[in-house]
Picture 1 (cartoon, rainbow, N blue to C red):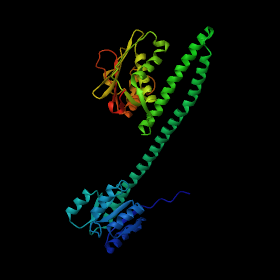
Picture 2: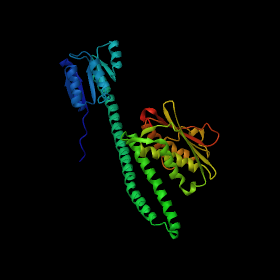
Picture 3: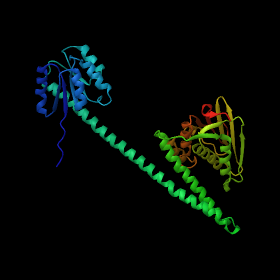
Picture 4: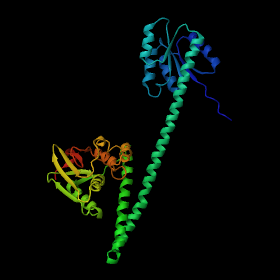
Length: 377
């Protein structure tokens, strides 16, 4: 059995009983559910209590006039889309103009004809119904989007566990492969382990992007020696066989202070950028890393002499939804959303990261971190 269609609710706010009776007489044959308020304050209470689909509001009311009532209704996010028809005196243009200024959707003058009243009511009820239907569809879409986000987050989160298991077992296998006869097998184990590390980094990037964007990312800050962290990341990346012939030079200033950073997050940012730079150069190419401290900022520059990202993508490389477009034009920006994660993570530390391609060749990534999150070395 189909549910009975909900009757439109109409609130009449009018202090003259004769007018209330007349309006009700015109409306009742249309099967509307009618509520009555005899003053402005009572009218606002009825709006909150009954959430009407339309309001017929007289201007001259005790306690609070119709203009004030209408203005409050329209300024309240919960009620601003309820249509309001102001009931005005005949030929009073000033009241009509003021009615529109406070947000009224229409007005009707006294004395009014039943046909005019019903036409205006039906028209605004139809618009209100369309609005309510759109709002319900929008809420359903938002719920579906949230469901998809939650599901994706759950799947990505669950991917971490088997990766950790794979890494742990590979490390245990590697410890028993130091004999010469196991050298070839150990090489393959090392490759698999690096791939799981890359996969884990992509998974963690996705998880943290979601957390940062939703405001749920909590940084576990500790005192970090920036130069030492950079050296550690470089050592790990240049241990990969494919980087053995490539050059890496570091000019790390002694003036760089110890910073209060989330070590895990900061290392992953460096890993994302340095890994891209090392992969972007050929076997005779070079990556330079420079740190400096001036103008109340610690600056880290990561420079490669490889394929330059085009100027038109200079500001888009860190944007999540630009990655596909850039990739389709033949420019590989590392794995997953590493650049997007790096930007959000640095900004969470009150810093900035950008691509400075003023050089003729290659790419220069610049990371700035403010002095105010640092302590003396």
